[in-house]
Length: 104
Image: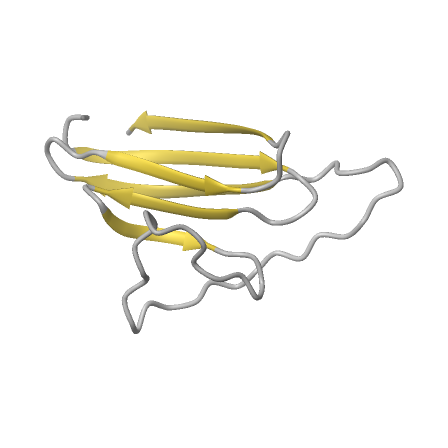
């Protein structure tokens, strides 16, 4: 749990395909990203409420040196008192990534 307030959340993954990522606060979805055509594959990932806006997707290209551009997100969240932040990730085996949380 963390003290209430504004936080900077940094997330990044390096793999060939875009990751399937869900960020929850106290078990409720805050934001998510899913690769095109992906379905909710795991029963522990809650369904997204109707009416939630869809974000625009960043398009990456193939590079001759391999995967040099990762998928990253920088989000700012106002966490309530005693918040429990959960990050659910589904992706390729061997994916490298990072997660950062900083109180503002």
